[in-house]
Amino acid sequence: MPIRWSAVRVNEAVGDIEELTKSIGATLWHIREKAQELRQIPSLPGYIDQPTATMTVKVDNFNTYIKGYIQRIRDHIPKEALEEERKAMEYGSQQSLI
Image 1: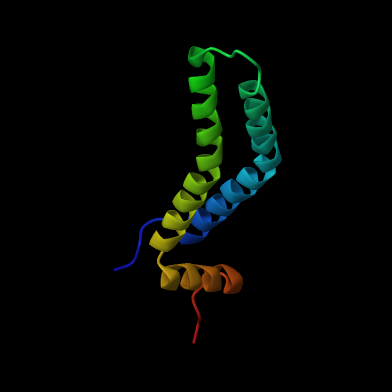
Image 2: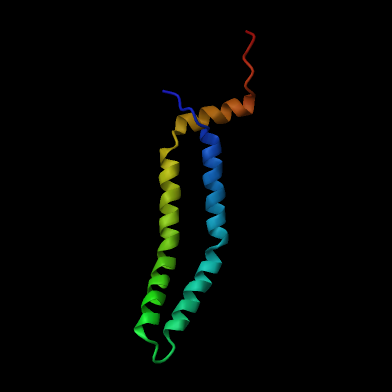
């Protein structure tokens, strides 16, 4: 059964999302480092340490979650439909006169 959406457009959009997540990777790493520095402040109360520790864990998990979602979307794109659509785009959508 043919799909009604563009497999190529979905694949390209997921690629764009992947590139964006790669571009913010260094920033996320800096956030994690700063949060760890914050946790090293002497006599830090628990009500500051707890959310800071949670922030560190969330930053650590962010890349894993995003990569998983990206892969899940890619796994749901029918490979045959993607290949057929790419071929159709390459050769054009005009019908053969033969």
